Image (cartoon, rainbow, N blue to C red):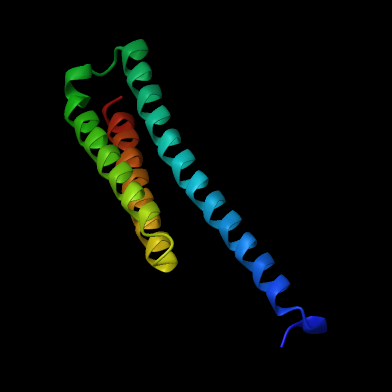
Length: 116
């Protein structure tokens, strides 16, 4: 039994809080993807400005990162569609996809630093 016998009001408030948490989590995931894309563009610019590494040496890395970004977006879209049925699955899938993207970007940065 809820506080003061107002179970329905409390359920409505909890549902609203859960919807807001889901929306915030989805926004954070999208911002993480956007940040990854921005970091890729920054790395391309760094290569172009520095001219210490040929862009052709990094093109395979960019291709792999772009593929990872596309896959991450697809997984995020699928996860968002399943959010009402499986909130836990959404969070795990989103975290895994973002970790994969983040790892790929960090690897590209590390390769660039090794080559410079």
